[in-house]
Length: 379
Image 1: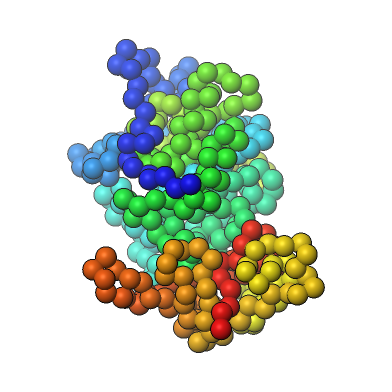
Image 2: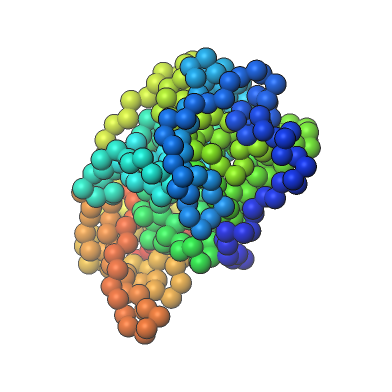
């Protein structure tokens, strides 16, 4: 099953007669509207639309006053501790501290590396990964393509790169008019129903199909469904869904994550430069839990699959349509494999493109955490 992720798919229309009631909700969320908190202050004023052509607000930025920010982070921590199926929904804003520019900010971003492939995980990525390691976070839906959660140590099995990934040759970046990969979309729908708390961090939520992991849990919370905690937004800019949220935080993501560690009594992790694990230092991988087609199989151990990713080895991509045969052409600086494939363009011409296989996919394969290998050798 594949479904187009058109901008209008999950846009929420709020009845006009609810506008006055929701004025405080949009600054603080439903749980904060009666707390007596002051509104955040404007730190950057802009009349520009954050994402022109989408269901987006202006690009002005706001920041909580210190005592309100502390109270909100305390509430955030309590919601996380109460959750049984906590989901993170991240957008470009979480990666700006790593030097990767976003579309919505008009204020400028941190200077980035020479190549976005060399960007390193931010403090925000590291704290959320630590929440996963400690059992708080159950699922991460990633709109970005940058692999930074995995560079922070998040296992591949914990992330749904719903809009495509730079480090997965079977999951190329989805264009705005394109379709979501069917298995990833099915997983998205599963977690849309399972999540009891969704943290939207660094995303303008301008009406993408994947926004449903936030809007649905908010709608359930508004109906007081048992066990549903709703949605939290951390973003300096306003979004169209602010009034739906249980808690709305206008602040720097890394600042909130540092304070959250204190509330949860977790040491603040120190971001480090990504290095490959010891199990990925060879170009040949013996994978006893997978058959020769790349499918996960508990009975495959008697005939273990051998995956050779040496230069010039031919591979078949286990997803990706007609252009599913490639050649290993080398490695990136961090050790990720480069795979060259030929793609037939709409014009009929054939163009060679390079895709990348992140080492974390191989780590996951060695642990048996993938349903299917992203690539297998062919003769």
